[in-house]
Length: 507
Image (cartoon, rainbow, N blue to C red; front, side):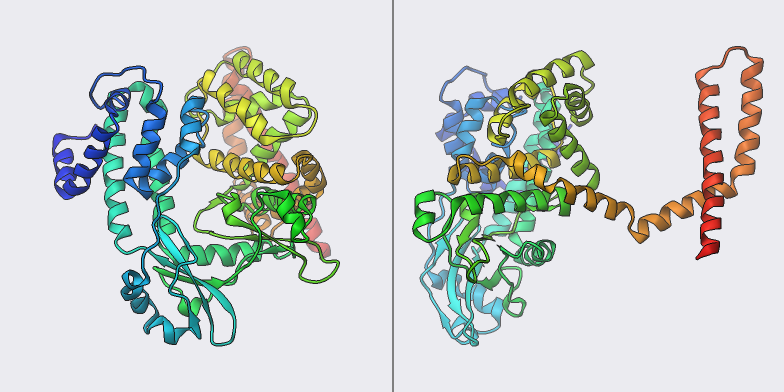
């Protein structure tokens, strides 16, 4: 539990920001929210509390807006009315005059933008909470977008993170209900995302990695980074002109087929999440652009923008997620229940409750088109009812998949993600076999088998001694069975080692 000294230290270091936060809490009347978090005050039922909380987060700026956006993905923790409020979060991002940005830009470029570029537009093209974007032209004629970090944003957001970490620790110490939500872990996730996004070289590296990952999807465009002019506070990348995937009629007017974009988007998100293990964490329409074919007959294209937030999926989690979806679509409640039990971070839930929850989910979404938005609308409240809490990385996967599914369903109402998943199954299997057969992994397995076979005499003597003791004690115990299994494993390793030696002799 945080000490009084820690509280005083945080208050002294960030007293100006703490005063601003306190003033916003008072202005929007959030005493009842603080009480629910175990931070004092009197808890009351207030129908407009979610809306007032959302407005307060917007008033507090980008750190708190991003926290609310993370909370908007946690349907396993929050009721629908809170999710609906947080989904409406918008960051108030006024456009700054370029002269307010000029000192930072000139320091990053080492020269004025008017000489670094053949043309530089001082009128901003777009503005967001962390940065604003200007258009420019390189001396070789390449059109680029120049993303410039807002001055003073880093120390302010770092102060916000210190305050939030302390408040989360206080709330966890004082409320068992809050502790179940694991707010400290959520703030750590927020901190990682913010610090990554504040350093634009991370976004540049993400773009390079995703472009390499997706090289075989020739119709996917990831803007090229101009590293000669990119730094922590300024990012220069190819300018991409396209149409956001919001209105199918607008797409058709530009000669773009919405159904073609939906098919490509499904391939893209499944390739990122289930094959490559690296994915755009927030593929909403503002971060996607639809482009006509680069040449006749090549197909419509899809561009990925704003790559500051990228998620990662371990091979184990890829397997689990795919198993969950395939169990759901295969009308296998047992398989769905197994995954729910494996994922739960809130303690062990009785198997019969998991199975009952899985049966309800399969009954609703086991047949017909797979609409992730609809499935998740049932899935997360069901988790909340059963007291299940998902790991943060899994929530991020669901968020990316659901966001893309919503975008694609919006422009192509007949879109069915399960069809894309079926078409990709062969590639998913090939990807997993390729990983299993990688030289490094095979070498590690062979070294382990070699080590086990070298230890075999000692292990067999120890196993024999234990079995003799177990037999003297009477009927075979669990320990005796475990020894027999270990003996079988050692014997198998010896046989496999011998076979490898024979095969090696022929090579």
